[in-house]
Length: 248
Image (cartoon, rainbow, N blue to C red; front, side, top):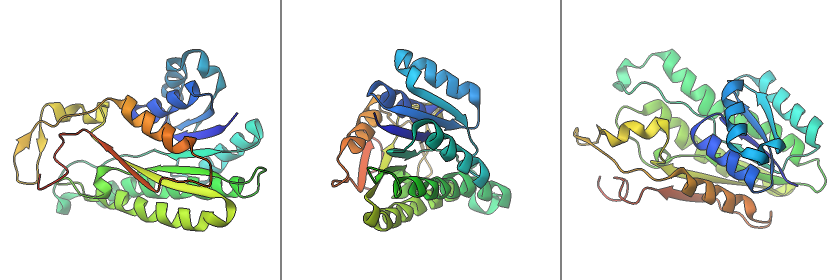
């Protein structure tokens, strides 16, 4: 049985991936700040939820991250997959109006949190037998191209690409594979507003199509299913008609 950790497992993409992994036969450690939301994820998995372990975690705090991975090792003895998913955005205001605190909060969750979890995953994966494991980072279409008024989110998602490449390189000697999935307009509570219309680069407001979360889950399951001598460094899955490819 393979063991996975999913951060941000209490909602949206993290919840969908957690349920998919549980139904695929993984034991999954659900990490997130709110225990009640993590328990809802367990409930959605049905009988497969019996293989879930809820560990409330704040990925911005090194001690909390260390406790998450220590608990995983204590209960399961190893770690095969880390899905770095926890992420937040800042208010969509002009760049010059963002507060330092708003910037810092996004960097802390999206980038520092992913780094801290990667660091702890390395410590387990490089020393376990069989050695190695896989890390999948949740990037975004924003890792390639920004939306208006999204500097903190866009900057951190570009940075995740650098972290993915460095992790893949530094993990080679330890059979640790790392890849990134870039998701465009998956249907979650966060993207509900897109159906009503969102700001475009030309200043217009337009509704954007979304896609079912199941497509994201299947893509992550494919990446996770590969043997450690094969890797998908980057995978993009998006709503076909969203304004990304081309000039908007």
